[in-house]
Image 1 (spheres, rainbow, N blue to C red):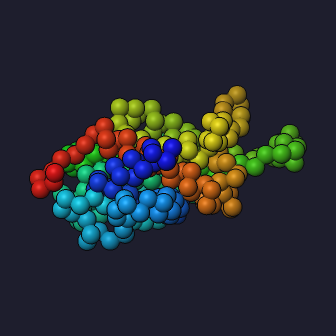
Image 2 (cartoon, one colour; image 1 turned 90 degrees about the vertical axis):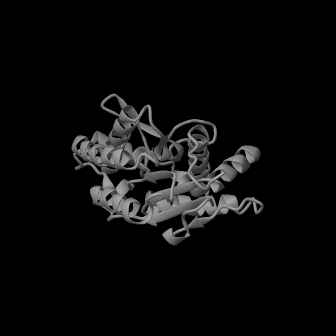
Image 3 (cartoon, helix red, strand yellow; image 1 turned 120 degrees about the vertical axis):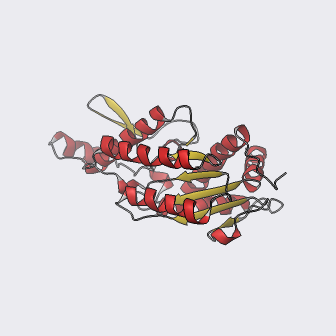
Length: 252
């Protein structure tokens, strides 16, 4: 793993990437900073300043976009930054919704249709950019005897109902963009080191949730969680970059 991580960090350091996000994205960025700190010889420029992007140098530019609970505002803000600040300056771009953007009341089909329409427009407008899609993060769904008793008594388990909608959105994302590029944050959040998944069943279907040991508040990533998710994030992103290199004028 150390050799793989070192190679992945170097690949990321040589690329020009924009990552639009909110709070879990900040957790992932913090995790990448912690991981890259173990490899001082790799010059990975992680910045929130778009003025530092451009030219031949690699850069991981990240920015909060839009407003939590309003996912389409994130799409709009993401597009604004691409159009006004980053045209011709980046090679890869990805946008991540947050778990708080989707809950039990969300119309997932409508949201995905709107998301797809907006993203496809970005893809058409910016052929010079490789667009990468990120699955929606999950929350931890507590288990145990008390939870099972409440469920048997017919009380709704809102944590599971919320995660079901997030799983449904992620399924639509993976299904539609099978030939594109996906960084699967939800998968890394729900996968143990031995490969087992944190899952629950409802109405005969299996759904996934955030591993309890990866969070202190049920949603955001703690030190353990952010390093594990950041490692998977870097690996998946680096694979996409290596498989789809972008060569622009003035770059070697």
